[in-house]
Amino acid sequence: MMLSPTWQHALLILFLSILSLLIGNSVVLFANRVSRGQFIRSLLAFAFLFALSFLFWMLSVQFLATTLFGVRKEPWEVFILVSYSFTPFIWGFLVLLPHLGPYLYALLRVWVVINLIQHVAQAYRFNLFQALVVSILGWVLLELITSLSFLRLDVLKRWFLKLTTGKAEYRDPDDLVFEYVRAQRLLALQAALKREEGS
Amino acid sequence: MNTLLTSALALGGLILGLLFIMALLSPLEALTWWAGWSSQAPTPNKVSQEALEEIDAEHAPTLPTAGHPAYYLVYLTAIGGVSAQELSHREQRFLQLLQEALPEAEIISDVFPFSVTNNPLTGERLFGWLWRKIHEKRKTLTGGMLASFIFARNLFNVAVSADPRYGPINNAGVAREIAKSLYRRGYPLAGGIPVVTMGWSGGGQIAVGVAPFLHLGMDAPVYTVSIGGVLTDDPGVAFVAHLWHLQGSKDKFPLIGDVLFPGRWPWIKESAWNRFVRAGKLTRLEPGPMIHTGRGDYFDFKATLPDGQPYVMKTVTLIRDAVRSIPSPGERGGIKPGAG
Image (cartoon, rainbow over all chains, first blue to last red; front, side):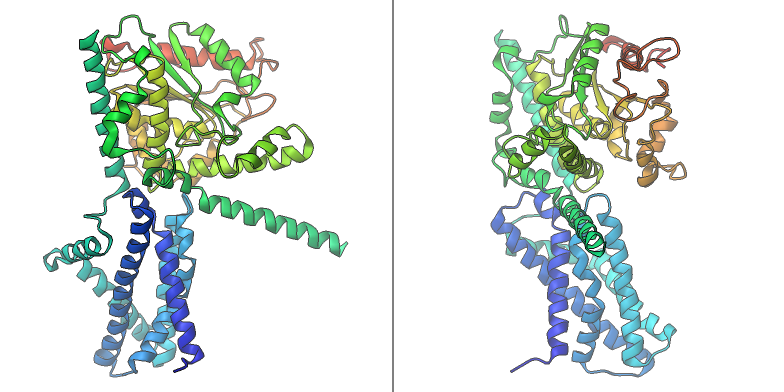
């Protein structure tokens, strides 16, 4: 079965966006000292998690447009319009740039939301307010769900990452580096004291 | 004419492209070192062995401080440097004069601040051969232009050091090299002897960035001297006991830090930098009409102040006075009055 050019473009955009964003945000993997093999597996695992949030955003657009404004589109149409909105994330690897990276990431995210509002308005023939509600409510919902602690999504995420990558947890670079320095200090102190006793 | 313009544009595009790739890849040295992908990786599970091996048996660190220098000064070169072993003549002369002015101090200058493994640009690395060629030719006109890539490479490394995502890793690596050098010079661990990190230009950021790791890793009180340093909003400043910032009236480079790093903006009241300044731990010193680098900079021994003092001597005097205002291990609680 041959996919139409629109589908091909949408899938390519989604694939490149995910790949690029993962590379841009890969510092956490380096910080956690993953091996080359774990690095690849972690990228795949993070890609899967990213695809889940994409799916959620897509479904939320579909759900909100239908329930709030009574307009229904086929799921594949929504898939294509959300994919196209993700185009700016193709530049996600720029997040790696020192100092500028985090600012560029914020800029890309805003650009994606603006894109989505524009695509939703066009595809559903919504006015700006309707497009805003449908596009942003889904994002707010996603943020809420992922930050509600009683849902224990973090536990689920950790379990999944452990299963796929073999890493028990992913920690901040700060924590890891300070832990390393403290360990070095303790051992150097022990070595100094040992020599002191020996002399 | 058109061909000339097209060629110039193509060359400009090529240079910009190269700089962009250099910026993008700049965090990789620190990240791959930390992840254990490079040959000189830290081995967290075998730290005991590593620590024991790295402490030179002949200069074993001991707790008592008697007989040790009163201060350890660590000099970190500027972004034009390729290696700690190849400091410019002016820097060498400055360090020599500083040593004469501070005979009670041990001055260390064998750490290259823009590498986590103290690996010179001209050392064993993928593009070492290229940096060597550029460095050899930097005295010629073409080489001088190509040397801009050395500045750019090290400048990106300063940005890596200041970036909260990469900074801890990068700065811990450089601090580790400084710690090794201190051990080699007999620095007594936990003895409380002040370590003064002293950075010129981009080295100023590294001097601040390594402070938390030297402080926590060696129980060392860390002080910093910035010589026209480009200081960022690195939270590591919280571990600096006092910072003296020398800035010539004609040196505008340090303003880069004031503008580019939000934590330096005065209205971000709770940033580490602004808290540090409010705590009275920053002393700004204006040595005279020095520029950032080149003739008339902080290390110039020909240019003189109206009182006839060479610029380099003024720099040395200010640093000497600052360092001597540091209380000895027995009298902590703030710097002595009269330091700038």
